[in-house]
Image (cartoon, rainbow, N blue to C red; front, side, top):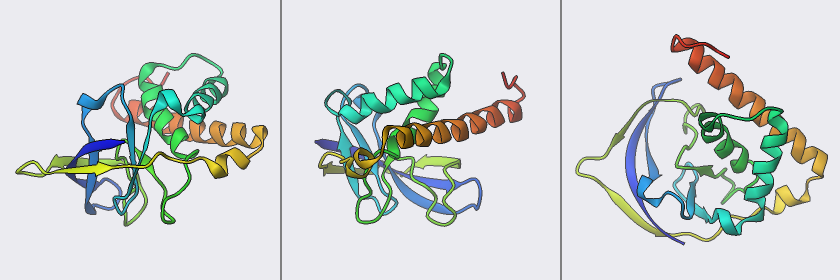
Amino acid sequence: MNFRLEVFEERCTACGTSFPALHQSSDDYGGPIVLVTQSLHVRGVSPEHDPVWNEADKLMARAAKRPLRDSEVASCFPLIFNDTVDSLHGERLYMWGMIACPCCGALERSSKVRKVPYEYVDISAEPVTHVEWNRLSESEKERRVELALSECMSKIQGWWVAGGHPAG
């Protein structure tokens, strides 16, 4: 899979650290998706050809116990799918370039700014693998998805409350 990724400078909300991150263009919507490590190594996934993508989607829907809003799926599914993917060179892969802060591990950002002049990286990525995920029992997979979804939904509720909107 080939990708053209844009380089951004991001700042962590929790600790203030600035670091580079690679992001996929929104023009790539509907095609293969890039996953990136903190040291900017990449793998790709083609959702229509990856059986674990559908499995994770179904597990998330079951764990939710109610229909999820599109915004909830958009926030939570990447975190759940990330957990199904084998690490690369000992580092976790993150969908959409949402890498953890290299200093404190937080995922929240106070800023995300394009490099100027715009900077792009053309890469070729091997497909993700799911060896560790496939070794898990069905009940362990369900437990992990339930935990990740619960953590994600708690953060979403916090965002809504902090933004002055209803939590429900």
